Length: 301
Image (cartoon, rainbow, N blue to C red; front, side):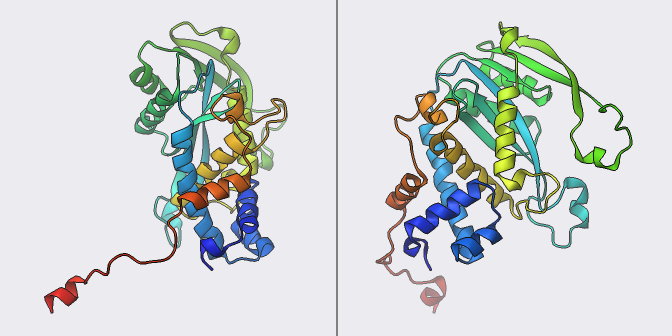
């Protein structure tokens, strides 16, 4: 069954379930399609959504931007990769970098990959490209940001780091579930790096909240489950789809509109139907094949 034969409502159902965190297997059961069909739609929609974000999320007039990285893994956690039965390409720890406009809650930029300086710089360059004006930026204390922000923005930014201190929760010193729950934040230091950031707004709570939503909605980010991406590409496609869904389709409860509308990036509320129809509009139409090309073997005979 080709994508073009798949009824619109089935595609809407599959993509919505993906964004809400259902596994491919349960989607194939509920929507009564093969895993292969789900997987093909994931790839097509992922490419489409990455392009759409790239095109539409520009000239963002933000005041305050928060950045964060979410850890997840593809195939296996890095320390277990060597023991995998069939190592997958790009297996190991994967970081999803995200930048959020604090006021509209728009995801301005995302990048999936490593956590080193090269990724930090590519990410920060992209954030800079999408902003219309000078902003106040808050990141966590990850050292790779220091050089990346300096390279991307120079002095044209008000930048502070929020450096958190972590400690053991009271009375839980040696409980076995301890290693499955995150460390408790016991305090945070606000450090001015560049420009004149207002200390009141040195915060990463909005991006942490948004990323918690992403982690909950997207089972691929859930630590300690086996629903992680088997393939790095699938992980990237899923982040692309999720971002468009989150920015353009999902109503924000307190804002009563989508982040894209709140940020002035979109005039209208989109639905998943709109997204699928837009995908159809750019999809290559099935039909006439191009001119027949002789293969090298035929020519040389």
